[in-house]
Length: 93
Image 1 (spheres, rainbow, N blue to C red):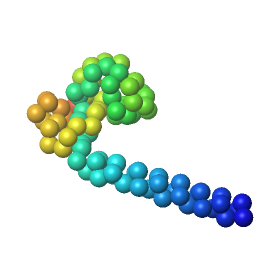
Image 2 (image 1 turned 30 degrees about the vertical axis):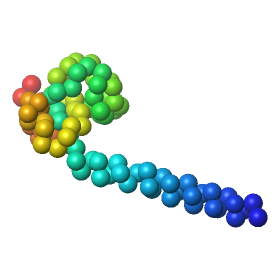
Image 3 (image 1 turned 90 degrees about the vertical axis):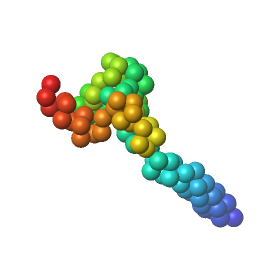
Image 4 (image 1 turned 90 degrees about the horizontal axis):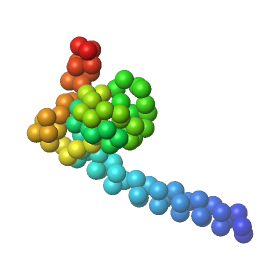
């Protein structure tokens, strides 16, 4: 009987995880990475240069290698760059 309860709990946990994760996928489609607009310590994840791999570790504001999620279509109005533009800028430096 305990085995059935364990299996039921595992299945319920898996289903609830899938239900919670689904809106995040839909949300990502409405957002884009915007490079060069991040204030120090406010990046969303790893940078282009690989000097760190986590959110909140940017050391300098407006670094072209750092990115933040923004609403799709708003990056250019914030004077931000796409990943390709940021890579090109990094190569020039």
